[in-house]
Length: 379
Image (cartoon, rainbow, N blue to C red; front, side, top):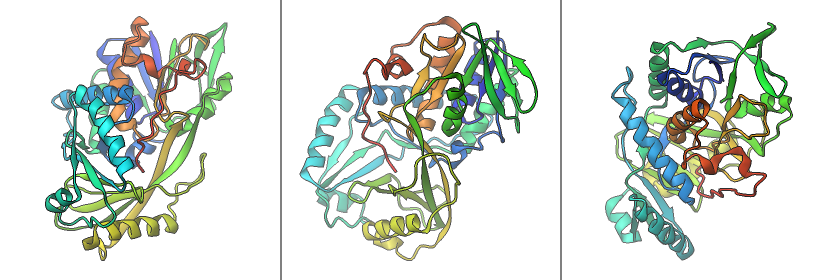
């Protein structure tokens, strides 16, 4: 079998590695720019297992287990660190929502802790608790180094014989007789493949819509701020639901974070906006006053690929051309979901088996009205 994986980010790398591990045949990865160029290298480098939907929580739990296990085989240390997520809650309604969700999380074995404002003050003295009603702490959540994860997958895949084509743009998918025939690369002719997997993130729609397929997914630009390094004191990722800002600290000491700021949908430039920087800085300075004079060193932007239900899409629709698969629409959760996506999708491609964890995320859910509404999207 000859397989083309289009996209050299975390999703495409995980898929290629898992296919090679299963001796799927001749595997090629095509990347328009260079490995990790897109949103993968623009990640906030965090993972969590706490989602409103049980399907996403289960998937994320199993996915991070895969990454932790694989870390022992990688040439690069992904620096996985379960520092926790701290949600700051500003109303009794939010507390009740987290209480209810925590019942589900406990059944899954990842229950968290609800904190009073006094407990927040004692545990995290740097947080201004004015206006807070309480907090929820998820100790199973944490961080990793996004580039090291990507290059870990890259080196493993390459060692298994995966062929990488960087600076090589896939222009189109060629279909004949209801089957994938191959791809058109740059200005060259047809490159024949039995299977094509689209893992091109925000650019997926550009390619897949040429085959007549339309999925309810749109790219949304997101921005991140990073400050000068300072003494390490913020261990968890702190999410202030009142302002929608999040803030955390890297092991080097930089303060990193973002805020839900109105930005245009669709593909565009990846320049950052001063309005976003101001909004985030004000929110962070209000909630963690000690950061008021901390200097912002740089900002960057990437894309959340937002599906209509904020849950990822993987696999294929039987009505699609035979041999065509997708993995995208992660809605900001790509890095934490990709390790398991790669494993389950590789198995699906080779055997046709749809794992129970994969089944809810098939693209057929949109026409079957079986959406997975996920409202706990951060940033």
